[in-house]
Structures are given as structure tokens and as C-alpha cells.
Length: 246
Length: 292
Image (cartoon, rainbow over all chains, first blue to last red):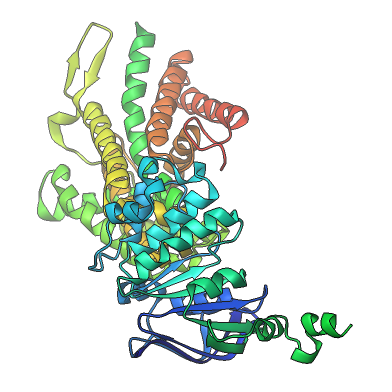
């Protein structure tokens, strides 16, 4: 597997606030990587830096071997990077079909069409003419994922898909992920729900205060190690061991 | 019958107001951009027509083929390399920048053309009319203006509703940074919006110049009418802009009838009163979204 996205020693943030500290991760072509971490760990900033919505302070981001430094956000979509933003951020003036169509604004060639998105998310079939604001959270999230797919991405970034949704809805949405990745699309999934992240991903990276605190194949990681990396505690003092000894 | 005539003339006058207001409405709707130089740009277009008509020795109508593209190109360049720096959640920078631009345009026109009033003479077409009854006659030229206004506004609305680019306009208006995630270059969208705004105000300026005489400092007065049309109809709604223009036109011509002797004052006064009434009762305008 060759690396599709290589982030190396990336520092970034907002204004005076630094969110990422010389962070390096690699996403290989065809794999699904989950990035987990607590609130404020830098997960969303990482995605926004990859899409170009927040500036890179130092370090490099390479995509398909090409340096993205000088590529503005709207051109990165044409290169094959597509994002499902946190909070879904559908366009309220556009109906569902238009929201999907605007995702394909760049006209990058590929298999995704409105019909194809509806095949993957059948719940959208009766909703295409509706305004996006009247949809339920799960329906909106399906539109947001479909909208990102319409760009025919090589790499799809999913930010907090499960946020604010009922667990049953989250499972439905993630059930569609294999349909996406089987097309050869690489996925980078940001999740707070560790169980969900481990279930869908080949590999997991845990962030803590803007740095990588743990990395490994999702099948081979120890739950206690993840907890320690997630909360930034030594293994010896993690809640599990404290509980066990106490 | 005078009153019926006043209303008919008001509707026709409303076409000109709507055409003036189109660019303001679009620029505010897509990018929260308030252009205080809008009226001055109309006057600038009219003066350009004067110059072209004189040097090329053609009917001022013909100069539209030159003036409108030149103004549109100017709008694109100005937005892309200037105004874009002032775009943001806060409309204040755009107000300051365009206020300055308005002053520059007025003084440049004074320098080049002097303070004398000018007119655009298109010949008999200007005065030709159809008489329906003894009291009601409709001029061809005002009908043309209203027709152009309707075509421009309906065309823009269809463009926004049904084209890929129009979709991108609406997406950018909703949320520019998310639009960028869709591969939309919002800076380019803003420049295209300004090109359309300049083109429509150039048409309006030419029509104004044909209708009446104008001087270098007449822009701000036109700006007020355009703003009133936009606000009456509802900010950012193109249908509202057409409706607002017509309501303002009718208010003014009916106001003229109320006091024929002082109609220069009573006409605009009635327009302002209607504007204030709408602002008091329905601040979002007749067709504006209430959530704004």
C-alpha cells in the first residue's frame, strides 16, 4: 500500500492558539484510518488543515505525492479530497438534491451521481425535493456524506459523523461506509466514539493535545492503552488499573 | 382617471427603480456587501454613454453594447482585486470602501465632464406613446424599461435556481467556507456577482440618462431610491426587489398627484413614507426571509 496522504511535522492553529504540534500521520491508499481523541485534541483542526480551511504554520501535507502547501481549499477538492464537516453544515437555501449536486461542483470524473447516493442511502429517496433544514439529524448526515461523495473523492474525511445522533442511526450511517471504501476510496474518520472508530477502521491514531499519543492497527490495540492515550495518563494510573488495584 | 394614470405610470417607473436595485440586492444577498457607490456607478455609465455616442456618432442606445461589458469587466476586476478584502460577516468595511469610491467617481466625473447637466438623446422613441384613453397614455420607453427590468430579474432568478453556477452562488451565500469544501472558489463567485451588479446598474444608468438630464453628483439620490426598493421588497430577494421597485414607483407617482404644484417634493416624500412604513411594520421587507 502506498501512502495517499502524508502529513509530516504539521503545526497549525487559529490566531494565537496552536492546536497541532509537529504532528505526523500517514493514510495509505485504500485503507480506513480512524483518528480519535478527546475534545480539543486537534482532530478537527487536522482535517481542516488537510482541506485547506486552516493555514499550515509549518510542516508539510502531501497528497498523492504532491505538496498541498500552495493549493487553495477549493482546488484541493478537484485533487480528490472531500470532507463531511462536523455539524453537517448543509446549505439551507438548497434542497436535498441541490445539496448533493453542489457537492459535485468541481465535476471531477467518477462513479458518484445523485442516483448512486440514493442507492447507498435509500432513506434519501423521498426527501430529494425537501429543504435540508426540515430533515432529521440522521437524514442531514446522510445528505452531508452523499454531498462529499458527489465530488468523487480519492480521500473522504468524515468529521464526527456520530455527533448528536442516536446510536441506531450512527450504525446505519457507518453501515454504508464499506459501499464507499469498496470503490477504492480512502477514508479518514474522526470519532469521539472509540467503539465505532475501532469497528470501521483498519488503523487507529489517537491524538492528545495536538500530538499523536498512540497509533496501531485497530485489531491489535489494547483497550487500556487507548484509554491511557485518550486521556493522557500513564498506564499505571489509568482508571482501569486504579480501579483494579483499589 | 388621473389616479389610474398615476398608478400605471408608477408601475412603469418602478421598472427603473427595480433595475437600479437589482445589483444592490444581489450583492447584499450573496456576500452581505453594501455598495454605496451604486448610484454613482449608474451615473458613470451614463457619462460613458455620452462620450461613446459623441465619439462614435451613434444613437446612445447602441453604446449599451460597449458600456455594459466595460462596466461588467470593471466590476469583476474591482471585486476580485479590491472589494474582496472587505468581505466578511461585518458589512461596515464594504460601506467605507464604497463610500470612498463614490466620492472618487463623482470628482472624476466633475473633472472630466464639468458640473453641467447632460442628457442622452435617442430620438423620437423617447416620446412615442400609445393612448388608451384621453387620460391614460403609456410611453414606449417606460414600457421598455419595465420589460428589461422584468427580463433581467426573472432571468437572474432562473439562473440562481436552475444552473450549476447559480447553485454555487446560493451555496456561497449560505456559507462561504463550506462552499470552498465543495470546490467553489468563493472569491471568483463574488467577482461574478459584482460583474452582474455593475452590468445591471449600467443599463439602469443609461435608461436614467435617456429619461432625464443628469449631472456628476446625481448618484446618491438614485442610491436612496434603489435602497428603498431593496428594503421594501426584502433584503436579498430578487422578486422582492421587483415588487419593491414597483411599490416605490407607484408611491411616488401617486404622491405627485396629491400635490401637483409641489410634485418634485411630494412624490419622493410619499416614497420615503411608504419605505418607513414597511421598515416599521415588516423590517425584513415584504418578501424577505423573516429570520434575517
